[in-house]
Image 1 (cartoon, rainbow, N blue to C red):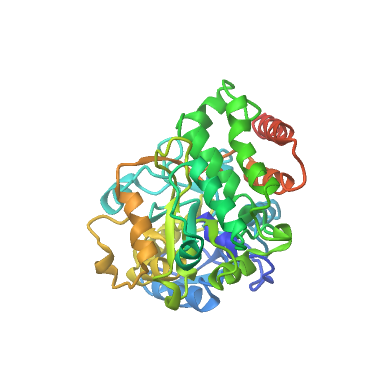
Image 2 (cartoon, helix red, strand yellow):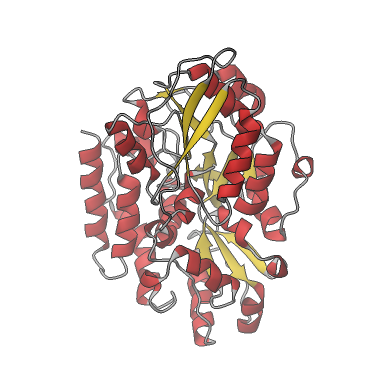
Length: 425
């Protein structure tokens, strides 16, 4: 987010495109001397080096004397990379799409002034941590949705399901018709975890939206029966053979290609996939929420944003001015909507105001953002008080991959409890 998700989704295998440097090379102010600030970014198939170059140049021009030195994350785990930089005295001044909760306790980030946040965003507290906003809530995502190929559904004579039982029946019917039911980029941990994320968010958080806070209080655990039951749903999909052959060896990038080519009927993925639907497939790709047992719509929701600001930047004023300008730049938001599937969250704006052209799937799924359906924090993706502690996001993704080869669902959930306890000591 601009969400953490898109960044993770597309950064795998990238080389380090910009050298690291100490945070600021000189101590001038935004209004006076010259200031150089480092900015941690990432590349995806949609958010290209050209996008970053142009967006940085536009925002730079609004802050006199400011130069931005870009640092590109070399792997999918930007938080670990940022921490490596911090440990070596090279913590960036500005950081895109990190998980703020992993830095706030150490006092590494400075919050935005609340009046600016309140004035510009639909959900000012959407990604707040203990009441303070460390990344502007510029956009939102649903993680996951289930995208489906309408032609393949018609061939198998099935309809989008609303309940878990119907979902299983749709999978069975598709498989019987010789159609691969589910695409999954299982080689990339975050992508492998989409079904697990959907099940835990819908079934566990859907029944208790405060579950994460209850876990902090020690009142619930991942090894509890209801959580294990939800997680077992992913194992069920594996055991019934509903994913493509060799799903754990399919990269995230290839999973997009496969689904777009019609090699599978459904694709559980974050809403950022909307930006990857080919225009010649716009009318053929539909979308529905992750199904629940009783058919109630539960939206695994995450409010994202642009950049965090280091509390130790040599010129916090210049960093803040750049961050605010970048976050409200219509050209950036247009790109995020069209190529990264971001749902905009700015006040007093409609999609028409951004001059965007979007697919029917975007319009249909965006309706869940504005409707009154139950919204819960997408587990493993929230950047607010519902964020998982420490490296538990990665542990959750690893558990999903493990469920391809292990039927010990409770054992995997117990490992998450141990990771939680370690992270919160």
